Image 1 (cartoon, rainbow, N blue to C red):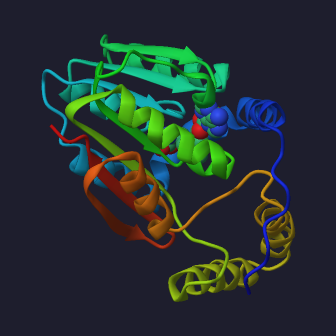
Image 2 (image 1 turned 60 degrees about the horizontal axis):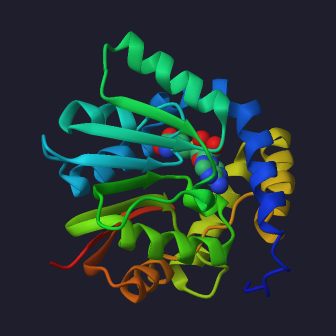
Length: 243
Ligand SMILES: C[S@@+](CC[C@H](N)C(=O)[O-])C[C@H]1O[C@@H](n2cnc3c(N)ncnc32)[C@H](O)[C@@H]1O
């Protein structure tokens, strides 16, 4: 089942691809994400692990239209919401206005180009976004998050987490995803072809396993690193910046 990974896209091309893709998908993600029970569970787990406090200044990487940001904003001092897609940021700010949430700022910028002062952030969260980054960029972002967090600051990452078939959990996830789509008939077969291509060639979806994320967190310097499987392929990884 394991395949060797193809050569990665250059960073700029990946960012441009994500921008185009998510500008097109923004409205349907905004409409559908809240009705997806699996995603709702992951969002809840991210928030539970993050345990935001009233004085926390938080950053949400790949915020979409606010699935984590808005709930986080109700429990923290402020949230800076980052997304590569301007359409997502516009939807997020509309959603915040409708819910009378005033402590959210949105910025359309790729995660890979962010920079903050060392030790300036209390909490960084990210949900279902970092699997879109190239593998080298994932590790770089984890190192950067470590440098931006104050001592005692937390990084909580929810995402699809499975590898390329080496571990038993990877194979179970891949097989259960395929079985689900096969049962859907021709529409599902089309999605196998489309998503399978994106996964095999790592053009859009580039998940890595829980163990890989845990190793990246530990190599960056995080402590008390733990991985919590949530549902199907989804898991949450937590780490704290040592004092
Ligand atoms: C699957 S959606 C998840 C949105 C939201 N976090 C949630 O939990 O529903 C992935 C989001 O990541 C954003 N994204 C993908 N690549 C990005 C990048 N390089 N920099 C910033 N955002 C990115 C997309 O624009 C999209 O809004």
